[in-house]
Image (cartoon, rainbow, N blue to C red; front, side):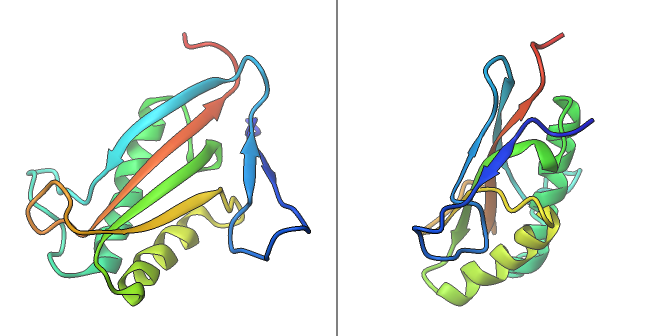
Length: 137
């Protein structure tokens, strides 16, 4: 099924590796996802110290939560990526993994460096909102 999300770009704004905005039609069902964390099935944190591996695990977690909600990565309308670092290089490392996972669906995103996240050794978290056709069943 095709996504109801429409990505928008403006020639009046600087070029960016993501859409400047996104819309969903009236009547779309919005899905607000909890932050996707880099946790293994046993609750331990994935790859302490490794921004790329944690970002990849966050994408897996996000994908699973979307599937449970009847959605996929292509239905995401916006993301917020939180990275526990003050180094821009660490933020970019996480961003590159997440951006690659979304492929051509370059959803509007915010990338933030934060001081700490909720789990021991956690470096990355992804918040997302998705939109799918129709009302919940």
